[in-house]
Picture 1 (spheres, rainbow, N blue to C red):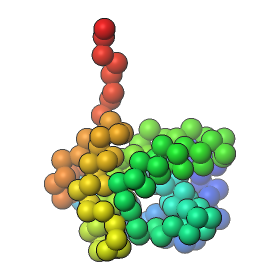
Picture 2 (cartoon, rainbow, N blue to C red):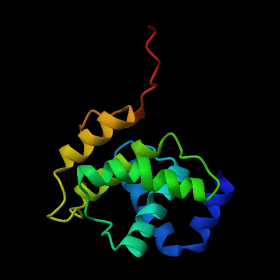
Picture 3 (tube, helix red, strand yellow):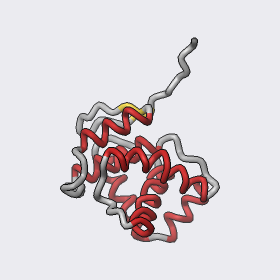
Length: 144
């Protein structure tokens, strides 16, 4: 997957700069971010802005749900990729970054609602403590 996504990072200096900003923010808090997942998240955000007129700084719980399970999934499929399993955790880190840098629009849902939506629908864990690492949680089937 990295070759296709590396191409996206290399051809778009704005995406590269935003990616570095988010990764620096995360590292300062002890969080690692998968560069491929971050590239997917940022590319889809750009497409939403360019094709749908959606602000990259305006987020609702509904948009979070649609973003991961429709928009990002479709974008990856169109690129011949699978959605990285770390994409939901990466989106959560990106939203926390927007919140911590006061970049969410006033019309956005509260950050707790955005986090709750991702935690509830993506099988990820987040303690909500500033600087706490994000960790994917393995979703195991329940024996019947």
